[in-house]
Length: 102
Image 1 (spheres, rainbow, N blue to C red):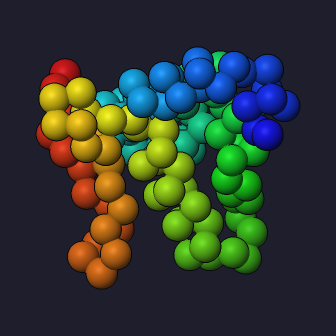
Image 2 (cartoon, helix red, strand yellow):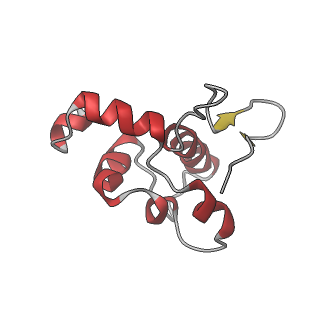
């Protein structure tokens, strides 16, 4: 439904999510901003609808979890390993990053 509301064809969305719509290298190098600053502008509205992260709300850790989920979804799949570039790891820390080639 989110893709329809944002006029994004589902096959295009799936392909772009596979490639990744979040610049993980820039995200990792930054020490300010929010996740939406690093998402391809074509998908910013889509990402905002996917996970309603409300800055400054009293959701606390729930908002952190939403952000982690969005990072994992938007960074795509590594074509060499066919594994997510960022995985959510429960009990062992929150996120696990694979090596990103720059």
